[in-house]
Image 1: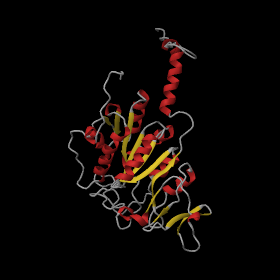
Image 2 (image 1 turned 90 degrees about the horizontal axis):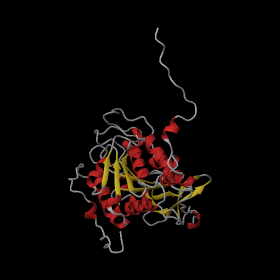
Image 3 (image 1 turned 120 degrees about the horizontal axis):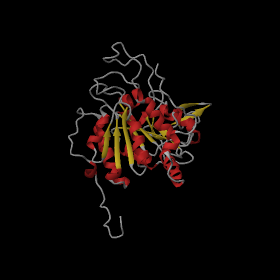
Image 4 (image 1 turned 45 degrees about the vertical axis):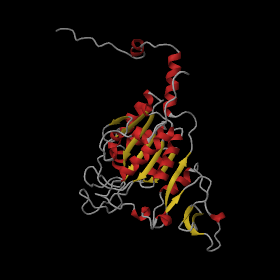
Length: 346
């Protein structure tokens, strides 16, 4: 833009909303996540022409159709590979990767792992409904033990993956979580992920009203949320409860729930959240009601030393170009080569 060009007008949610009919089941949590993302994007200051949504296969992967941005609806589990290619080709693009617990953690687990460890500067939003919704209710990698469905009529015997723990184990430098219907918290976590230098991984607990209705009711229902949700804030004690009188205390190497004012417990005993504490992030990721509250917000945020993967690759390419153009023909014939001669005629 030159000094004579008029400034870009501010964008609104409508600018990011496509003309496609949104086609999810009535009551699906995907609607709430879509609305939250469309509300948030104008606040980021990124033009829609610079924004790309990439998805794999599944209910959540219809997302790019509903965004008035560039988008790719790719193949099952391979969205991280496509998103990586886009970011390497043009690091200036704002890339969002949309996936689900089946698409991202089953056939796509290996691809997701490498996107996380490489720490590209993009955002990954994983919809977790603990079921395969698109294919009519088979158990997924995050389904709980005993989950009954078309593929497990007697109940699943698989131990489920905890997405946040998976991400941390793969070397993710930013891990956050939110509930689909809590737009304020979801938008706040997504903004933090977007501002992060590297891969921002966000898990959204999302209800599937048809094939796994109420999977998260034990901590999302209004009458239990205060007692079962721990909203993390960096530098603040980990307190929760209807009267904010409960908290997490370290006893040895384990966390326990305590009540302030009972048995001599004071706020000084409550663990203060440190977003850069990787060990604590693992512990928080694995908390589950009813014994513990579910940890929401930013579990871990610790920028990696050096450049994000895409910037590092771009810098290497710049250095190579600065040395001048290479000779591909010479490169192909460098080192150990041999010539295949035809057999002599007999």
